[in-house]
Length: 363
Image (cartoon, rainbow, N blue to C red; front, top):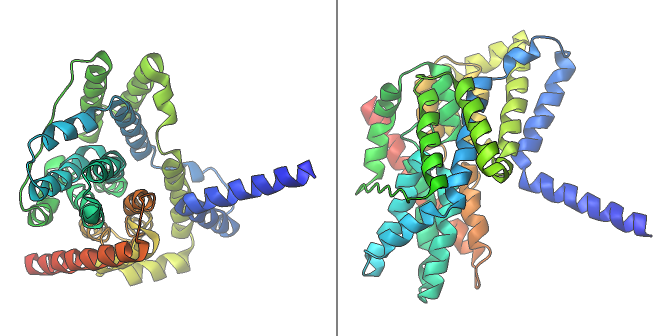
């Protein structure tokens, strides 16, 4: 009987993990299916973009360390002291997510500031504003993160793949970021704390690999060694499921490229329609897998960068970061999930249509 109970608990744990990491599991399945058609050989190792994975891992560890020190919450608290009414309060919440998502990624910004906003609004008896504030924070994070290569995982991958300079990348996304933002506020406060200073220096050092000043592998090794010696528990914090998802998708795409008929068909479908294809694909499989998948079948990386960033708007799964906010809202008393999804979808579609119109006006 005990064995049966343990077996049921194990099965529940596995099912819960699959639900939590659906994109990882799908990417693993796709990689395994593709291996049926392209047997395992020594070319597989060439599929993996270790450059992107090393940068992503390094930034995850550093951001986990900074967040564990409460730096971003302290900055948020300081900014909230300047707000004196609900309107300014909502602007502060939105700008926190918008600004910080450019440098700590959209999901980390939401993990940091959505619970913070919920606590503040509940303590202040302003629960009626929860839905609109959380939805706007989510949109702000997905829009602010468009501007930089480190704002989104797919940006980092496509930036590395494209070979473009940091200035060219920012110039490409700047019109969409500026139009998305009515007012810009970026605040940076470094606490006089040994760990905080080290993490900030490591963050600056990590940026040298993004700008190709220092080898990404040297940066990764230095950050890994420093964090291991100083604060090794932070090595448990990176999203290893996301790193594995990248690896599985690299395997899948590498194999698809080696099947001539599929390669030719996908290239013909995507060619000339990179933007709209990436926006549509993002709605179904989210923008990170869409970026990796489509990049294997087109050279128009600029269109993919714009398309997958704009594609983060729309459905609740278009950007996996959006699910973070939804999960946090689901823990609040008196939650109205259907209303949340309705407001979320409506506002996202409005922003998506507006930015698509901007794209076609520019081009």
